[in-house]
Length: 272
Ligand code: LER
Ligand code: MN
Image (tube, rainbow, N blue to C red; front, side):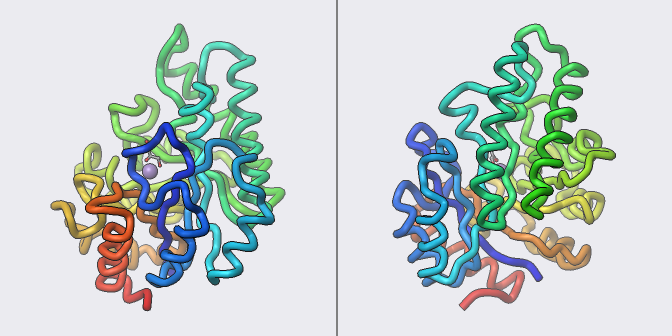
């Protein structure tokens, strides 16, 4: 069964970025629940920003689940990546991702590695960066197994990384790794893929999470991506994870959440 969620950012430096709700986690849970979402995806600055038990309480109060937790705070706040030149930095990056796996895992949710993958830079060539990335994902995927959740790896568009920009590129990065799944972010895919629905069919069983966004990163239905074809592909491959709205708060948070829910109702037959 497809489950629907909406993003909440607690990272001040990411303001203006693609997140529906901002700062007020309890308020976001209340609105998400009222609109019929199954879960929330949280983007925290670090694993200490919210107490796990506090979040468990909020989720319980509003009948929600934790869909996933982003690790990008390690890049935005500390400028760490899993592929940086210095071993100490890479170790700190792995430690940061592990701390998010602990936080999310205790609540039954996976962590997402997106911008923490880094890019070719600072004396590390692309082959070496991919080796570092695969080693880190293998190690962290094994760690996540302890919580019975996968680790989610997200290909990004060319302006954010050069390591994997497409579903096919992502499949190569995670090939033969255990307990690592792919994130299909429709915004990045709209920039990089030839055919979004075909890419989803190709990734099929390896896709463990979807960031649902229109071409301009506004809520579904406010751009020109053929989301009907995407929804059909997800149904056809019997996708079972979350479709999570990682979109700009346009015209505002509630407007973006409502628009997303209308789209989900139309394409997935879910919601209130
Ligand atoms: C993270 O999920 C993502 O898609 C990045 O583009 C955020 O900058
Ligand atoms: Mn994304």
